Amino acid sequence: MPILKSSCALFTFLTLLSLSIVPAQTNAPALASATPPGVVALHDVVIGKGGARDLHAEVAYPVNATGLLPAVIFIHGGGWAAGSHKQSPVYELAQNGYFAASIEYRLSKEAKWPAQIQDCMLGVRWLRANAAQYHVDPNRIGVWGASAGGHLVACVGTMTDVKEYQGDGGYPGVSSAVQAVVDYFGPTDFTDPASNPPRTVGQHLLLFGVPYAQNPALWKSASPLFYVKAGDPPMLIAHGDADVTVPIAQSIMFDAALTKAGVPHQFIVVKNGGHGFSPLPGTTLDPNSGEIKKALYDFLAKYLKAP
Image (tube, rainbow, N blue to C red):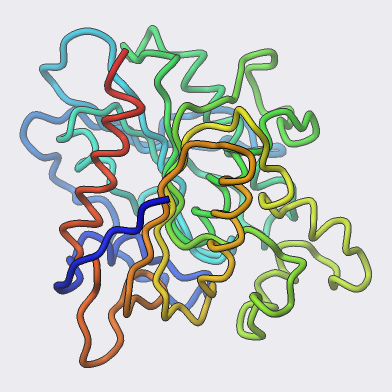
């Protein structure tokens, strides 16, 4: 698949997405208090239940849209242990013509896997079930996430047919299938020690609740690499080749599996990019930040904007 190449520096927008799989980065900017002109914002919309409590979403959409809108659901990062649905690019998505929702999911300190993917599948069902209310085309829904959020969107794209991962949070019988997936530097295989550095093992253990050696099947069950199949939605993967938190080998393996299955996709290797696309000291990103953003919106437009 094509690899975009060019050079320049990181843009501030991606800093928001770089909630690391190591939850030290919990100070990412929250949604601005002032809604941008031309955008409608809805805060803490209830989307269903995660266990015994309500789950929420931050919603934004363009004021003067005509016809049914394409939609993008954003899933935040933070090592499955931190972060918030309020840390999201929904305003920018709305300014680019999308109905955008950033959804809440239970963090690993509250619930273990597969609660996280069940909540994300719920988010898709909620939006599809309420598509008419929000003037959304139920056949044009995409998902986008970074780091732990990248992992979860890859799971949404590959695991829709796994009944256990639908959960019981609401809207039974509604499809959780999506039409596009954008995975920024998310892990795809928890079973490969070579591409899961020691710095992340603590987060993985918190997510699963038991060591790999004790229950390898559980760790494998959360690895989208093993669920790739023909018919999965188109995917855009972007990953820095200097990422030491989630090594790029994770996305290289995922890219190979998508290619073998014939799933339409694009793999952007960001030269000199660390986790969150932070450039190595003294270097610039290649492709640059503007090109990464353009690739994102070109991909979304290709698969979501056309009816």
